Amino acid sequence: MLDIGCGQGTQALRLARAGHYVTGIDSDPVALGVAQGALAEEPEEVRGRLQLLSGDGHQCGRWFGPRSFDVVLCHGVLMYLPDPDPMIASLARLLAPGGLLSLLVRNRDALALRPAAAGDWRAALHAFESDRYYNRLGLAARAYRLADLSVTLSEVSVPIRHWYGVRVFTDNAPDDAAPPVDGRQLAQLLEAEDRAGRTDPYRQVAALLHVIGSK
Ligand SMILES: C[S@@+](CC[C@H](N)C(=O)[O-])C[C@H]1O[C@@H](n2cnc3c(N)ncnc32)[C@H](O)[C@@H]1O
Image (cartoon, rainbow, N blue to C red; front, side, top):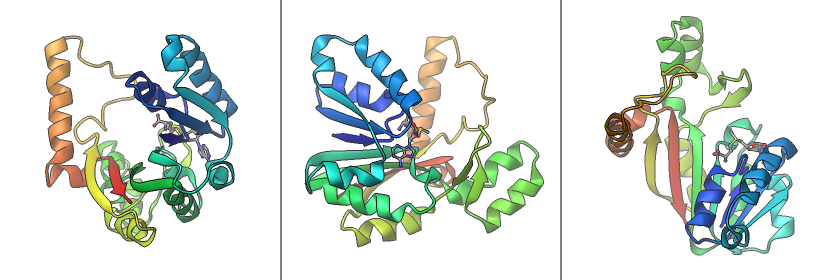
């Protein structure tokens, strides 16, 4: 598996713990350092399954041959690229036949909801006209419509097989909101999010889209 923009290694580590062989790549040395620190704490067998590399995901076609990976993840990355199409095309080339491409992006069809919930009506109105927004860290970013992603992924022969909404109910919780301390309530919250993320029309207005294409 290849995790492009692996950041602090959250998904790469979970996949390696589950027994998969994973390569994580990130262009930010600070994020990669956090991932390396977390990996160093893992048992030897997990450390042996995950390699972390520094680099720009656009260049991955230089380092790996075509059809090298069964699964390619690119979560929370495309929103920061000026043009996502070259990255998507190069990730598609790395997929083996039958392989899965997993993308997590901001949902343009729900872009007005977060500023509206915060009472920022100017930004809410802007969201109807533009795919650009500022994330909670103040970074300029870009949202995607499922319909547009569907066309792009079909063009690179990795059509969408499944898609889910992520953060339907909890997106407007304050950044410093603690999760419920009651374990049963936390389990119910997660189940409610999981159900909504799989169910129309809720998933259509989720903050994020998790899209799975297959070659
Ligand atoms: C929001 S974080 C997501 C981290 C992780 N994928 C996750 O879901 O938790 C985005 C990461 O993408 C990385 N990134 C952005 N552009 C990249 C590129 N062109 N090549 C490799 N990594 C990139 C950033 O350095 C950052 O660590």
